[in-house]
Length: 192
Image 1 (tube, rainbow, N blue to C red):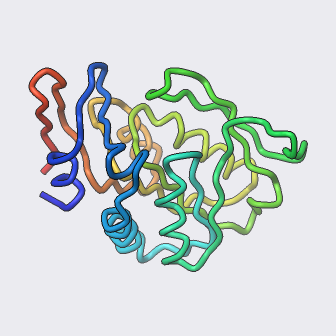
Image 2: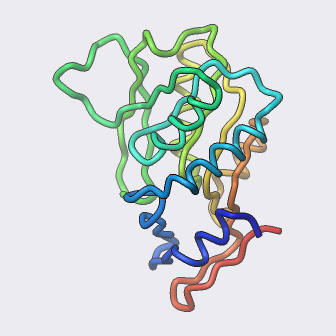
């Protein structure tokens, strides 16, 4: 069992509807030691890849993306989920359904921040149905850039996201892979 699986077992909470709450150490309050370990492990797993940009989606992916950007010494870009008064019209747009929030989000990255020469490592906290990852892939492709890999903190294999991304040929690495979880018994089984 790895460090993240142990942390999930000790501090995670399973909620009805296949929801895992890890906001005590990753999604609301951030345990910097765990974040550092996650970033180091993803950096190790993608050690053979040339990365010049790390991309995530707001909000929970930003912390891990920032730590990885520090390790690679490259810029971090995050797709925004909503228009703001200072948003430019010159942007790449995509759609992502949020499994956790149960809503469709328009996501965008301003064009100056993704270029055709970029070699992009996509990172996020959770992978369930793969909607956020596919939206980020779409943004990278719109820019003419290359996805070199996808790094995930927690993958739920009872949902199709990971399987689809692997079948599409993406190099996907997940630190903790949940095979099964039961909210009534509060039990989790991880992939060996």
